[in-house]
Image (tube, rainbow, N blue to C red; front, side):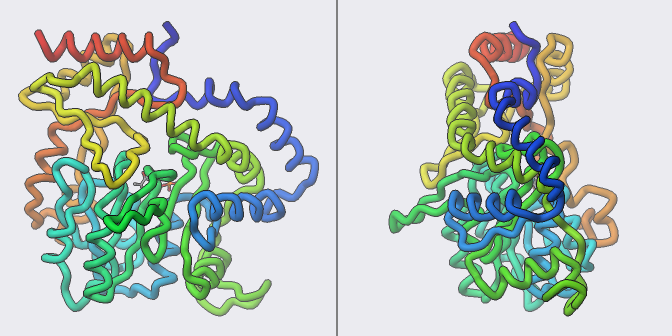
Length: 376
Ligand SMILES: *Cc1c(COP(=O)(O)O)cnc(C)c1O
């Protein structure tokens, strides 16, 4: 059996090596390192894939979120509503811009922001809702878009973990996550479902004026070269990364299918075990399994984590400390929040290896080790 890894980007690379190596060398030969045709064609290809009118590539997913908040004119003192049960980037950028992150609960089953909690947290200062499609499962976008329309708020989707997810509205309309809110943000961090070989990110929007603003802010606030109209930042996707992503994008659907197949295997193996709650999949979206995350009941989670490590099975806790309990947010009143579901989940979740290269022998071993610990 091959050693088990949380993600296996190396084996995945070897399957497309010839193509990728040629594309990377072609960029170097062209010496068009910044911008150029690989970056613009990737933006076009991704826009087509995602059903978004505009894609603005940028340096990473965190920048994408920051640029989104800047482009929407959200100002110091304004509030954005977001889950605490998430990766820190989502809320860090708000704090950086002196925008107040307002943390709300997630749904216990989907791990994503709870629309009922959103509505309760709205104040006259609220400007935007930032749902996170955590682990690859979509937030309840239908309810979120309705709340946003009713209260005249922007929606910025953090789609870093869910690129490729098809979300179905009750009228049958299907849209990709990231193409539903006013702005969508994603990351090409190497372990993401569409991962580069370094950092990268992108911003999605269907709004022409907003697209212009986003582009400008990502490029030093320039309307044309050396004319700076607004304060922006410097956030670019490398041409080499764009060339790699252009190739990997053509494989994204097959990568997603491989992740879903691995999830199906785990689901079957753990079905019926009272101590293991397998990931919920709402019929309104295709969970793309950036992570395969279990909720454990009456199990010493940290002891399981250590046991698995000893047996050569990596596992991860995403995330060991929720955002509202991070020291970073003390100044924003983080510790005054009472988010019981978030705390409850934080103590019970564990993510097992899931990636495109996982084989059945590896999965059988992972399952046997989990069950050995759970059932003893
Ligand atoms: C990865 C990730 C980000 C940030 O992406 P980077 O490219 O690492 O900056 C933001 N939000 C979520 C939910 C993520 O998983």
